[in-house]
Image (cartoon, rainbow, N blue to C red):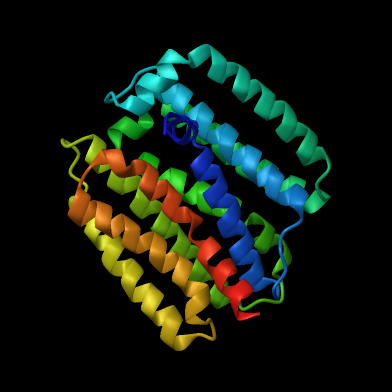
Length: 260
């Protein structure tokens, strides 16, 4: 149990969830294809590095303390080395990617530098939940990057709706656990608004597009898991379940294997 808790504290579950959804979305928009292994590895190390750096900056002047923050403070030197190694691996992977992905990835990198500058200089503390919104946008953009770059013949309206669906899913996760960690933060109305909007969008995609329920089911499973945490458990200790909920594309792949 301690081993899995360490993986959660190091955001490994976030990395795996991002890679699984990247594969699912590529499968949806690129005719059953999967992203090349190199692309998935680049996403994995990019997401991992970003989350580790984000935790490191957060811990310089934490708004609230938690077991996660305490873990990063206790192992700060080891995590610095891990960030350095991750950056070296990521740099090597990026140089092997197609030029169009490198250019698009650099644009996201610029946004990340601006994001970290805002984080360091306290901008996010002045605007409620702006950090969560910014993180959700960057996270979603990174996961859709390969699809954006290759789905030129796809239905752009459907792609935009799926981007918004996933963005709301990521935002639900971030706002939920920020509110559970900081009871003084009044984000309940925003969270409920996200949930209502997400349900409406998911139903619209189900009934008015060609997407099968089995393709949309992973999104619903992740959403319902967060609903359970929001309304039933109401505890920050279930954060790891919220991250594992992003493993839901595995159910789609399991269905695909069984059906064949």
